[in-house]
Image (cartoon, rainbow, N blue to C red; front, side, top):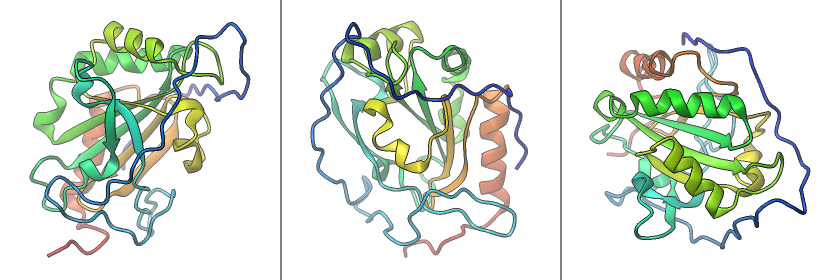
Length: 224
């Protein structure tokens, strides 16, 4: 899979600050076991390893986040589950692009600006985007709900947006830095790529993932 990347990585810290805004208090979210069509999210081969030559990728865990579907804040925070994106027949989309960001991170801001420019083109390509904020304006701390709102307004986000305070969930995937970019084949929820850094060309990055989906059969059996 061809990738074009900026060789810049900002590592997540683990510090906190007494002057930082109040972190979002994440509630205990109920599991979402099935996709919108009622098909159960697969429970086999769950892991964190991306596809490599000669090895299929693990299926990404069915994480749930508090967030804003389609960046719509009017109805308040709702549950966003990766099960929402599971699409074995590829009727809604083919690739999930998950981006973990921190508002203190300049590279994250650059990728958000790039996504802002192309976000209207992605659904027609078969790409669904989920951005998840891991830290706020202080390295290793937050985010607060206000920091999330400010970011969404600044970059005019229209895609799904989640909150994962201090990467407590995505951190289990071994997040090494931000931005953290993941491509998932939504037919099987197989991880095609996961890594720190920002693609130098967002469209080229997701198109490479789409090319894999187009040319390579699913790595796992599809439900009948």
